[in-house]
Amino acid sequence: MPAPVQPQLAANERVLAEVTLGVDTAVLTDRRVVVAGRNLEQSLPLAHIGLVRVRFEYIVGDIVFGAVAILLALVMFAIASPVRTFFLNQSTGLETAVRQERENAGDTPGLAQGVQRLTGALATMAGAIPFVAWLALVLAAVKIALGVIGRTVVTLTAGGGEVALAKRGRDQLLHDFIAEVGRHLPGPRTAG
Image (cartoon, rainbow, N blue to C red; front, side):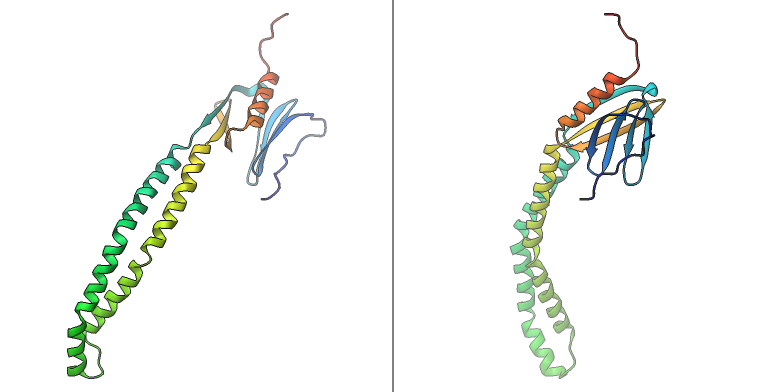
């Protein structure tokens, strides 16, 4: 995995908190929040941030995809043997016609020979259906696991725009980072 991208900071900026988001990095300074990645760098001045939200969410789309892939794999397991048997029976059933073509036509292949080759090839391909079904099950397990692991999503709203940050799983460091951002936002102070 490549090293996280570090944002460009001014010489007199003081870093208050930092969190790594895969290859992206979010930094809280005394003036702003900066998110730097491979293809972007976004900066939000603390004075412009109006709302900070953090939430954990399961990735329902991945879970649904996994469930559909499991159903598809079960169907493939169920049809693999009957489909292969069907094509093998068709190929075997053409044996008499192929023999007659060879006796009558000599060396030129006939229609029955072509159809027999095709059904034999289809039977061979049908033998790969269980392998594809196993791949679908593995993919389903991975997608369901990723969906259940979920992600922590942070949204910073500033001046009519939003910056969203996400990290796989429940990430306490991201929660702590956002709590630190919240503590440094300008707002009404109470005397106390």
